[in-house]
Length: 98
Image: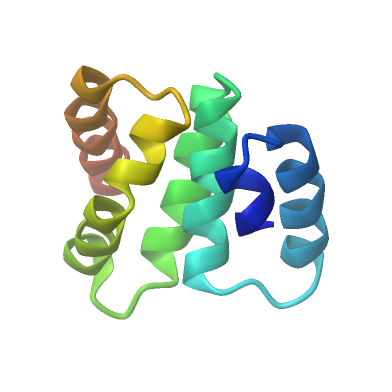
């Protein structure tokens, strides 16, 4: 799934992540599924996946953000605009607090 994402095959990655999520998804699976949805301009769905990632991270939002930031070069390569990244993180903080 991640290889599909990295090569720009977002629909294929989305299909793989759907299969993974029906089994035993890990935090990284939700994170990467969120990246895939975001690259496909499905921001609301991406935020849902990111919320699931935060909930499955022992370190909560802090741990999530640390891992998320490691993926920024891959997000930029996937067409995500750099100025959108802090907005998504801020929105996620807001959603987690609700």
